[in-house]
Image (cartoon, rainbow, N blue to C red):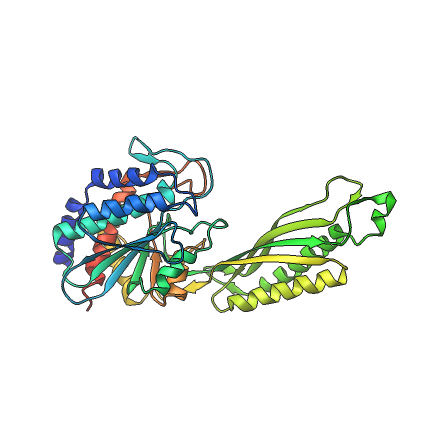
Length: 394
């Protein structure tokens, strides 16, 4: 078996075409595709895959202005389906066109995650060209609505609910130094604290009004106390549960009693905590403290992704580790995923194992994204070899 794996590694290394991969990445990056407006980039990806002869579908998945892409490569024999899934939307920052300098690709989305999607496309090409996929097949999906707060993750949820789910999933986000087996869930909340009436000078009655500033302070202190309680819930890899307030704004001038204070932050939890129960507990606390202060609160609480746990000893992670080791020379250490992404959704909503693994790229969520081209080549090789290990089955 080791000789077969060495032969497969060499064949895939020869089949992965760096210039072809890079051309695909540049074609995707050169199309601006801010979240909620990734339709043109998805059209381009569909055209690339169609030109390569893959079977391509366009799936609304709840977002008809930018239908998702679903493309398949089949071996013609029984086996499992390995899914490559990526998003083509980018954060709302000034657009940077693609460029390549000294082996490093730059441009909006090159790190997060058009470069990774291009690597997944190249993996499919390499599998097709070598004929090494002896069973099962590959499903590649790409979509919009990933980046929060502009997107809510609903299009990938729609893909999952419509059955566009493999037996396992690889996602080429920019995490490359570990096999993530656990991660916290994330929600973002925005709180508006209000009182009745109009803004008024402090000496003309403002001091007699319910204070949204004081009420906001009481609410934030209540969340601080909740955070101290949550700090007792700890995973040795993923860290602790938390509530965090990162912004607070109120008032127009130093001696005027305002009618509005706003603050926002995050709630993070571990997989043993129910996401809805965590939401309800936080809302109940906020409304109770607001009532004591004679003010009202409006809360926008958005669950971004639920927490997850993956057993790294099971078949798919082990297949991935064999593929990674064949390329890198040693397996990845197991560790926590520091951010949330669509792998959380595939594990919790789709019920299938999912691994986030992409290029060692930098600058995600900035205007200075950088991705070594060699890293995209490596990811394409790992993805192709994982399919060879996993899809035919035992």
